[in-house]
Length: 617
Image 1: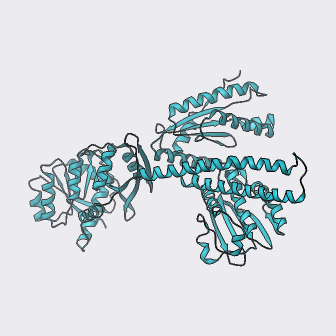
Image 2: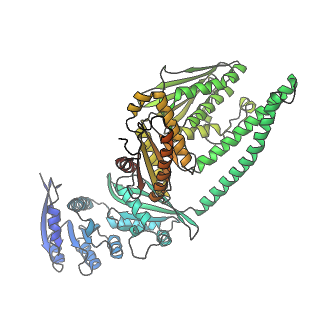
Image 3: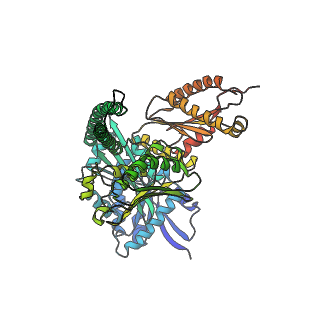
């Protein structure tokens, strides 16, 4: 049975046509009456209309709204169709009880239908004692009035519903004109669209260079019963945090560099003495030199861990993904620690599938994860040993490092992966460290989108488990693009992507052999890295293609990089044993010109890829 909704339309009969043409009206029957501005209140006195639709251009719309709410005793929802540029009127209407103000340029049958149905349902609930919509707005205004952070709440039509005094000050800093829509500010507009398109969170950091101020904008959706009804944007001044962070990072970088240089020199000379290049040494001298060398290595590890933590906290820790065999990484690390385990009378075993276990990850950083976990396990295992187990499933790799050591007490389990945690025990005092290794390990696993946790019982050993997702090249590339694109958008910078393809790679493998094709790809990788001049730029290698990610780089600058790559490839082709067989295609795409999502940019770069070598007749 269809539900009947009485609607009173004031002045503008075209609204009825838009509402009537909406295809999603199943189960609802609209009983529509038309009224002039003058007759509207008389109609409301004679008959109950849950919804009134009116253009915002009627005379004195604010007085009209207040009269409608008074006559209907707040049992009518008033929806205005307005000109989007009149933000002052929109704010007044919403603050004084209008259900919605829909900009005429955004008006569709679907949007109007939804607002009418939502308004009708709320009016029905009001009859049962529910609060009025404007009371929520007034409560929210009172709550955010004294906040130091700027708060801007927009409805889904981009109308300002709530803005606190701090929010107005931040908008002025961003160059907003009083009374104009906040969406005139590029960053606000981009965040609003980001959330409206379905994202759960949007962040931008803006540097106002002329004022030496850093602002951080965070946008989140506002939902009612699962439906998006608006966007809230929080604005904060993060200038002090940025300055302190820079001072801390500069200090750590300088101090670490000043420590590393003499340590490297000391280690070199100790190695020369141990190799007996200056002359023979006796057993006692060798023992003392080994102690010195061991402590130099320990101090170097401490410095590296401090640097890693500094990079992680500043967001500068990067992983460079490539196709890696995790079994091979584990085997190399286990081999490195075998002498240490044997010296302590411990076994150190590795169990893994007979086939290679591959994923896209950073080989050096994954080796660091294995190193930290195995080293810890050996350190805190007085007897028995350590076993490393690799398991390969359809969606992820599972690694377990199991020891028969002293274990971890229940009260310490929650602090296990926190910085500078060293638990009080005689055994820990014998095996000193920074307490940073597991914190770094956790971050490295999470940078690979994996998880890490521990299971332990005090006195009975521990089991550390971490997982790594299994990626295809396409999945890994999309994720890498998404991360770097997001970072560029956040600081309001451009991003460019070069897609380099080797077509007919099977043809090359057939005629040249797989080994030579692998050598070809390694040489191309070296060429691309030589052409790039900044640490921020990334090269990602696949089986048949490469992707070059140019962070903070406008498309016109990326075209210059492309030109350098093309020239380098032409030079390389002259030396290649079969230049007639070598075909390479290059495409380019950039944010914001070609899209704001990683899929759009990758599709665009692939679509416009063109052969850089002339066809040989």
